Length: 138
Image (tube, rainbow, N blue to C red; front, side):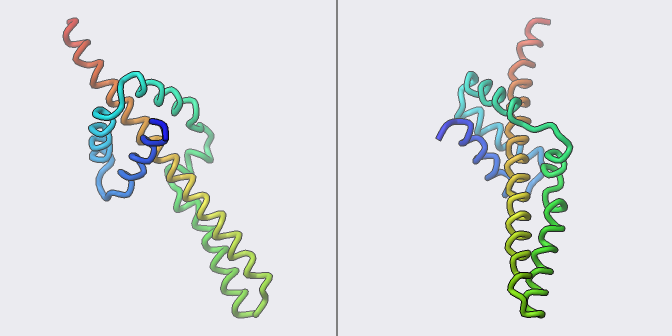
């Protein structure tokens, strides 16, 4: 597993913690600062910048993944309800399709949010390492 995948997994781990975004950023900054050399930090940042989607749908899924997936959970529930109450197995297909779509939307949003957290952390590290140099030259 490369540094890129490891940093994304670290960010996903931080997303599971109930805390503010600033606290998540601080904890992740400490972990990255200790375990990843500056050269690799720049490579990961460049990879993330190139990989992060900028379209409206991706940003919506990143920020509101549960709200975007909610209609598909509703379709899955209705398919289950109609499939059981009307005894029509064809309606149960909507349950499986709706659940799969909703789950994949939430998973995609989770990955995007983790990547954004890593990117913000790397930018924060870069800004804090550049700041002392700028003060010294003044």
